[in-house]
Image (cartoon, rainbow, N blue to C red):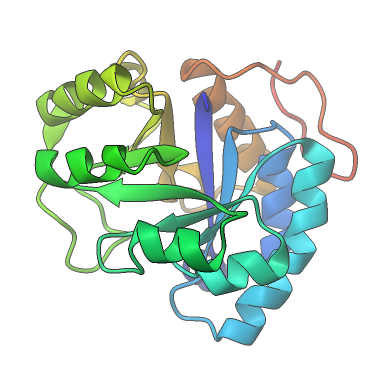
Length: 228
């Protein structure tokens, strides 16, 4: 896993009156490392329906689809990965009820990171690296030095590390040597941006983080063009 870990946040998109599928197509056109659906304020039935629509789009683009929090919905929708936090179902239970799912785990301290790595997940996320406005009651900021230490630990375990929290395009160069991927929500879609802007920003993030550049949108994607 290398490059942009793109997040489709339904709360953000609803506030901007943006179609989630068109937004997802704008991101998938650059073939990010992963695409996560984040739906904190949406009923389970709606989440499942959205995942089932996103699944074929992600498979067509060759991008893993990640369901946030809900292993049950991830399994029903045929997702490749479920992402769990420290307050969600533990890894062992997720693996027991849905062994076909790969699992990514959010961690915020060295102790949490060590416990997560012991389960051999698909990846570990670590942060918040910077202040973030996208999570209520966010954990304390770990900063670049905290991420650097987590990077050493994760690389020693040969598990990809995803940096999370407050990541912007202007600072991504600081994170590129320390993380395999970066999860981004808000700075992919700053106020006033168009879907073409989203695609161009996604491409810039992805390439800066070591992802392969894409010279043209994936088939079935939005008309917005990705930068080579």
